[in-house]
Structures are given as C-alpha cells and as structure tokens.
Image 1 (tube, rainbow, N blue to C red):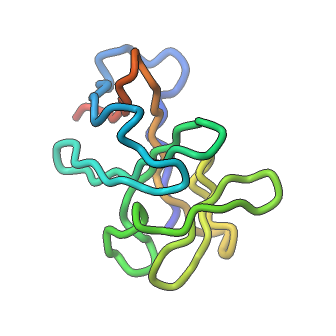
Image 2 (spheres, rainbow, N blue to C red):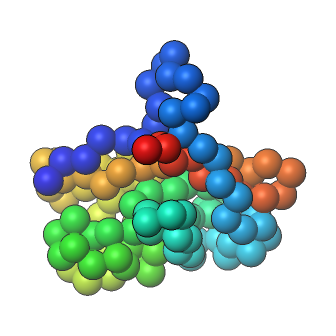
Length: 125
C-alpha cells in the first residue's frame, strides 16, 4: 500500500514531468481542500492558514475512493495534516505518510504559486 512521491529525483530532466496550472491561488480557501483533474490523475490541493500549498493524490488508499480533498485539515504536532472524511485516517500533507498506519502513504506532488496561479508538477508518461 505504500506509494512513492511524484517529486522528480535530483538530476531528472525537465521532460520527465510537466507543470500544470489548475486554479488561481485566491480560489483556494484556507484549510479547505479542492480537487483538480490533471489528465487521469485526481489531485487534492490544500492551502493552509500560513499560505503554504500542498498537493497529494485525492484517492484514499484505505477505501479506494477519491475523497481526500474533502478531508478535515488540521495538524499533529508540527505536521500539517488532512484526515480522510471516510475513516478519519490522518495524512501528513508534507510527506503523504499516514500518521495512523506508517505502512501507508499517498503520492505527493510538487505544487507552486507562480504569479498567482497554482501549478502542480506531475510525471509525464
């Protein structure tokens, strides 16, 4: 059930992935999720109160349902988190690690604010 991050490894050529604009930064409500469809990928995007952006796979690995964008945003210690709306497993927004079951992760995607547009990097392939 473990997944690897979509982050390109150091030295990966730019052609190994693509940045896709998905929405305006101001369209994202702090502490609420939004879903974006990039090709066949469903990505959950979060903007936290401190203005940081996070993107991860929208699929809950415990149920297979694409619902993480509807999860409850919070924190555990220093970790910004989202809890699945179904069975409440909590995922670290920075790493995708499930804080309730260390064997499980969700894919994370690099995300950036570029001139007011939120862009997500996904592997090409």
